[in-house]
Image (cartoon, rainbow, N blue to C red; front, side, top):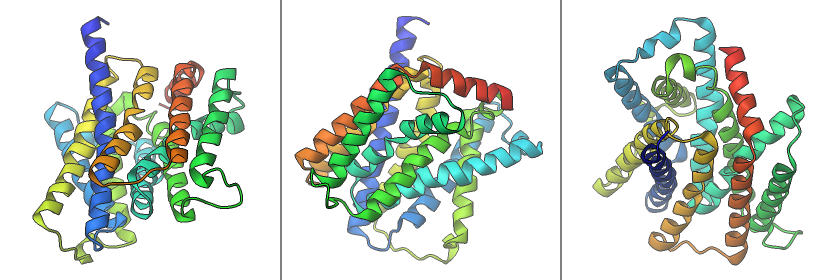
Length: 311
């Protein structure tokens, strides 16, 4: 891998993370200025549209997206990925943004890698290394600062924000683990596209999209299109290409740009007020995830073995 490819991978992963962060800010704007826009409706629009676009792109570049449905095992896996991976990481995140704000929702969601560490510890008996254990402690205290602002007898953020944010963090873990066996066989575009589409269509059980009337202005239509194209399709494409040039550990480090972008854009354009507890707690969580990424080779090797064994 030459230096030019490495730099390209770093830039692609960084821009992907920033676009994901900015998409949360765009969603926060929609929720603030249009009470008719719900997290459920926006998630349905986002996932169905982006899923279809990714599947079309997969077909254009020579993949065969329908092959994933030819085997019962892969069909069950992609449905599980959509329901248990995509829905919590998309819908629950938007719910946390709606009831709170984009920076806090993104920072709580950023705890996802530690959910994976706990999964390995509890179910696979893989103990964390010392740096990973230190990172988990830092993440815990960073979350505690954000949630309590130093007052352990009260909550500084709404419990509903913590609830949805916690579910979105679990979603990050399931969203990472569930599609692993499918990726080598069917490719990231097809797997991600079907995951998004299955999730978006399934949400109609809770509120049929065709029965939901939402009045939006042209500016709000632009925000929705931004979330679909620049907040979903482009970042997934960029991140998939980045992984061809850089290691997963490096890509995980660059995910730190997501909460940073969400914070900067929220403070700058939405006038969101964050306390010193929020900023310091968020910084602790970001540093903790970076430490986990730098020392997480054992986890990555296990995920690779998991995908190989189940494929």
